[in-house]
Image 1: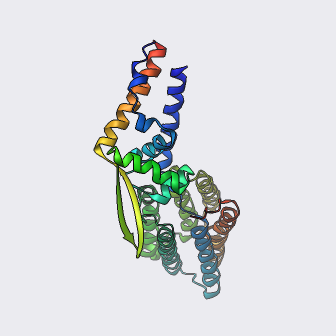
Image 2 (image 1 turned 60 degrees about the vertical axis):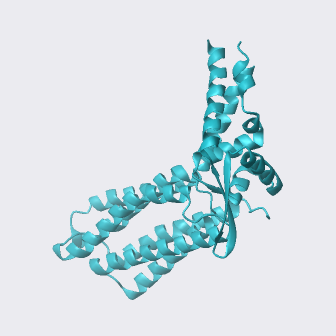
Length: 210
Length: 101
């Protein structure tokens, strides 16, 4: 009887210790912000006609940077509001988990900018970014609510399908205009984030009044 | 069965609410008042009372500071608290082990 009770106690302790390392700050505002920024950027990119590989890569890398800065500002505001440390252990773990794939995405974007004159296909960039971003989300999902990992899988799957489709195109001339790539970025980095943000907004538990 | 490990369990940590607080603090360098409260779904009064008991036993250190002009209270497990918590876990494992033997 005592041993069963002790085993249950140990299980509770293990669960609580795991929970201590989970990032729990409300994700809906950051997701909605990223989605809005992605959608707006796609519309601007489409309308402005950034169609050279260099302009496309540079433009979306700046948008990505703005999204990261915006997310950090929202997270800091939330931390201040909730009287919690901003750079907490779970926040650090999430940042560390996301860093490697995001770094590869940054390098891929820089290579596209630097080597665009050598015929590097910029159409590879959006699906590669989707796969890498999906990997980053999936890695972060081990320190966040479980839904993030599923969200990450969404990006990985869409990016992978697009990579397969692209690999069927042997001739660069057969690829559609880069305006469509802006639309693709808007639909995924904008649309998917907006959809997930709305879902989170509707399902996140309301904060208890202090 | 040898009842000794059960009798040796630290009564301060053994209480459900305090055990939960110690478990969280053992896994994180420090946690804020709101993080503890929201994770454990406890009331402000409960958290305050349990932390006070743990603090009086020397198991938890309380730090009060300011963040963005607002007060921030954070808790961390002390060296003595970590030793007591480790001892508590060891005793639980002994109890489980005894039943297997």
